Structure formats: C-alpha cells, structure tokens
Length: 433
Image (cartoon, rainbow, N blue to C red):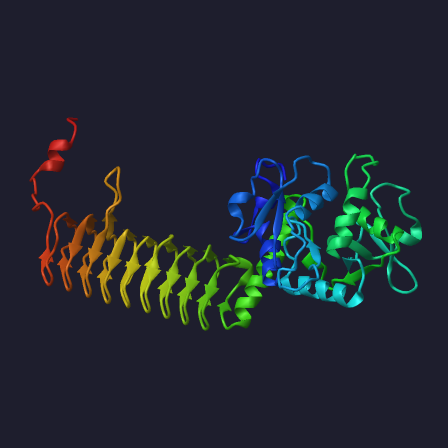
C-alpha cells in the first residue's frame, strides 16, 4: 500500500477494510470472533465490542497467525453443547465476503463432513492464484501454486478454479495440525494451506466449496485493488438503496457510505456525498451536497452545495439550501435556512426562516457557545448572532444586525450603526493632478 497505516485499516466506503469481514462474520452468526494483530496492536482501537484481539508475536506467516488466533479459542461451542464449533478463517484484506457466503461455506462444511473445507472461485484470468485440483470424486486432491515458472503443468494452469484463502476447519483437526507445519520454504514461514496437506496425510477429507461470485473473494494488495473493491462495494450499496425505494439519479456521480440509512422515496441527485452514520428519512431531496454523521428527517430538503456536519439534525420538512453549512445544530420542523448561511451549535425552532448570510458566531477563541432561536423567527439578511444568545418565538432581526443580547419574543432586534453620509468624500480622495 506504500503507507504508514496498516493495509487493513485503509477505509472502504466509510469503514476500515478489516471491519468488513469482521462484521460479516458476526452477522453470519459467529459465536466468537478473534482478530490477529502484530505486536504493535494497531487494530485494537477499531474492533467492535466483543471481538477479541490476538497478537502474533513473530511474523512467521499465515500458519503462525492461525495459531495465535486459536490460542484465544477455549474449545467450547459458543451456542452450547459438547461439540466444538467449526473455525472459519477469513482475511482482513478480502473485504467483500458476505455473511451469506460465510454461512453457505459453514453449511457446506457441516454437510460434507470434511476436516477442512476451502472456499474456491472460478476466475476468467486466474494468473497468480493457486489452482484447485480435484480428484474424480470431486474432493480436493491438492492446491498447485503458480507463482514461479514450472510450479504447475500446462494442464494445471488451464484450471480456472482457484484458492481464495478462506477456509473452515474442524477445530480439533486444525489445532492438531498447526504444530506440524514446516517453515522449510523460501520465505521461512508457516503457511496455513499446509494444514490441508497434513490432514490429507492423516487420511482426513478436504473439501472445496465454490463461491460463484468472484467479487466476494477479491483480495486487496495495493491502492489500485482497493479502488476496484471500493467501486464494487459502492455499486452494491447503491443497488441496496435503490431496491429499497431510493432514487439515486446518477449512481456513478454519487458517494454513499456503507452505514448510511435512507428512507423510501428520497431522491439523491448527482454529485452528492453521504458519509458516516448519516440517517435520511422518507421523501427527502439531497442535491449536490455533502452530509456527514447527520440526521435528515422525512420531507427535508438539502442543497445544492450544502454541508451538513456531525451532530446536525434537520427536522421533518426543514430546508438547508444553497451554500449553507450546519454543524451540531437542531433545525426545527419546517424551518428554513435558504442560502449562504453558517449555523453552528444552535437550536432552531419550528417554522423559523433564517435570511441569507445569517451566521452564528459560536466560538470566542477558546470555547464554543450555543445559540437558541425560537419558533417562527425571521432573521433578515446579513444577521450575525453572537453566542450565547437567544431569540424568542416570533422575534425578528433587522438586516445587517450583529445581535449580542437576547431578543424577546415578538420583538425586533436592531444592532447596527446609524448611517452617516460624508459629502464630497470621493473628491477629497482624488490625488492632485
């Protein structure tokens, strides 16, 4: 990745890449999830509650990583009973694996009665992948690596079925095989696929389960592959929303993160970006705007060129219009901020209309302060509200006012210097010829 950041912490549609397979495993019903990290423990801060961290003290390969993870499993079935649950091994850099695909793999493993089941897929161009060679009965005979010339025959190279690096094991079989792995290879590492050879030597069956959609097992090794995975993930996100009744006018010109929720009959117009845990209700319109960790209730309107920052709540029927920025504010039902305004750290009542260039001066250089604006308030253009300040219900402000004191309900606040015209000013400014 050519990055100071660990590969699996690079973001994919609003979520670190690592969390995609972790959350898919939890959704698939995993009783326990263990993430294997290096001694630097850089992954700990992003893990959900209940997900355990194991440390691989030495970088001795995928076999060593599996051994570190197995040390965190107690040999019990999390769902109860005496039988130990099967162990699924996923990769943090194979992010698009779905809960459904994991559940199908586990089901195939249970039904097949094998000691290990590997997930495979068929690629139109399998270059660089290990080929899966099956015996006449359909079981896995071996996996042929193809990294160097001569590793595989022409017949083996013609096989399109490849190893994805995703496995499910009988837990006891995996636990018994890991200490028998050998590091006698060019890299001096322990490779998890060697477990399959150990199990076959013991006369145990190794099965393969075909994942029909190769996109689900796409690996990410650089930023080019990450961009490809992001495109596939974004397409899936868009499709999910559109099938649920959301109109995305131009999906190719729209960015929506994985954790965004959007209600039925909402329209998202081109060049909109909706990120984080944003929640948008039913029947809303988002035009060419940027939304981050905010809430937009039913029937609200956003944009064009609006920026809704974290902590913003746009109540039902409210509007944040052209070149409006809102931060950490609650905009009441039916309230309108039509254009060219900044509203930060404010509570705005229902039915209020904030005129063009209404600004809340919420920061005094050291602390943020809150502005309270009542219901049915109208501010005229170019009003600055210096927080902390309160405008009562149905209050008004005069154009060009800098409001530093509270305005009582129903009152008009005027805070500006009286106009003075200086006659002949332009003539006096001219330089003598």
